[in-house]
Image 1 (cartoon, rainbow, N blue to C red):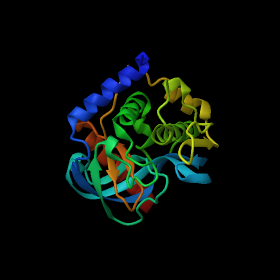
Image 2 (cartoon, rainbow, N blue to C red):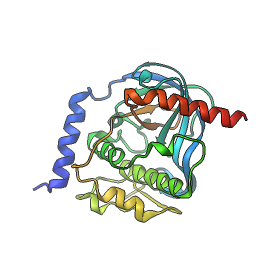
Image 3 (cartoon, rainbow, N blue to C red):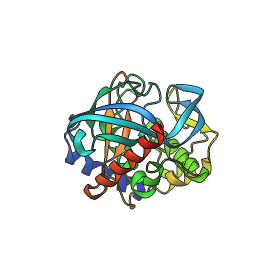
Length: 247
């Protein structure tokens, strides 16, 4: 018998699958990596890496054009999280496909397939419960904000790269729980906080509307779809960041 936590996730995954045809491209977005929001550096095993130091936190992307769902964001800076540890962020303007999270990351040569609806449902609840827009807005962040964004990024990677556990309480960013070359673990961060994020994902929390930006030759990302009333505020925040960079 499925436990009630996993049943909640299956229901949420079914809703996501119904909302969009699997694999459908919802638009395009032209983006270039342009620094970081709240961020830290961690050591990662799994996800195609072995003891590598990586930036964990908010990746800022500068959008210059889009079509379809790519225009859910105004041109300017977008705060995202990495969902693809084996490739590099785009150092020049690159066209990405905009898709539902379950249809990323690509290529699938490492994972064998995209993350799928169940993991996408966990990510939606993770963002709904704990994502903090303050990690993106502004131009400087406290050590606590950097640590929280760092732990959040590790939780994202744990969901993507580990096999689904029987219960979310079994997720653990300090141990690789998946056999073979797959799986994930990390050090150099607040692992207690990362695990507390993961252990609370019982399918009853608030959820966030997300999209993934995918490109088979570059690092893939996940982003919260902005509410209509916040788009102007995000644009003003981007202008403030650009002014700080050029000052």
